[in-house]
Image (tube, rainbow, N blue to C red; front, side, top):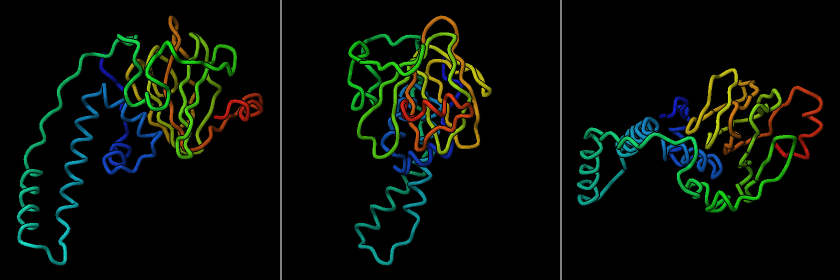
Length: 221
């Protein structure tokens, strides 16, 4: 099944410009590996960005630089080829390897992951050294739910295994939740298998319930 939830256009433009933080870029790249739609949109954003950059008139350039600039403009004005359609994402990864973009933060192997218990049915691994943002792997048991919450900043969450439902719809393997401070939701994991996702946040979550707020410093989200 191909992803049904994608990166927001503003996130794709920021990614094309190299403006995403390392944590956000890791999650976005993980989604792009399996989503032909978002790869096509990213190629278009890079294409437009290149045109805008090259159309800025410099004060003075050499004849060689001007010829090179004209050649690049001609290439950019050609149609962008459609990216190859990848195979549908399976419910479980076909190998023991984590997605490539996550390996610098969590290692190469699923089997080698060392999950930390944070609440009944909820386990987490926090990545070190993410330039101020939070990057975590979350594993939530079937039928369990996250507390109702909103966000003090942006959040990118990529579903790696399993699925959940919230007010925004059903999110399965390959789907991306691209959320901002206006979104309030409560993900509930679907029956069957745990939901494993990777999430990047540039600000802490805002929990409504007192118990979740009390536990927040211990969880670190």
